[in-house]
Length: 113
Image 1 (cartoon, rainbow, N blue to C red):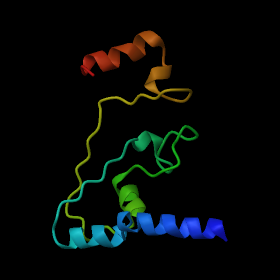
Image 2 (image 1 turned 90 degrees about the vertical axis):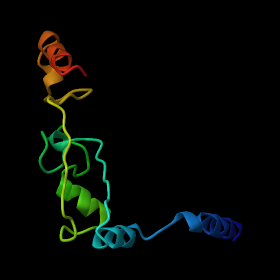
Image 3 (image 1 turned 180 degrees about the vertical axis):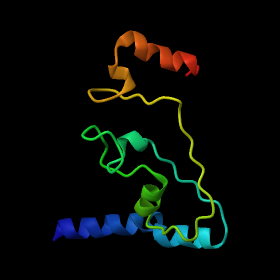
Image 4 (image 1 turned 120 degrees about the horizontal axis):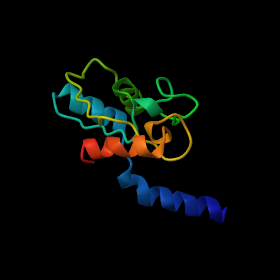
């Protein structure tokens, strides 16, 4: 019983940090407010559109971000995508960084990354 009481106390402490984020985002979008959703990966690591089997377990496209946020596409007026001129990845997998050290090192230098 002591464990359940302790957990209930933790729930009360964190209650003010919890929110219905789907509702909050929907309200913001319905009110023509700007919402920024950042994706740390990229389409080549997207579960559905990436270079399988070297993908993440998430959907990293704009539609995937909306799905993950629990928001539909209807209230979205504009999507701005930012990308690099090349794709890199640490570890094994199909990537420019696996095409030989000499060739892989030229791409970041060309775009001054």
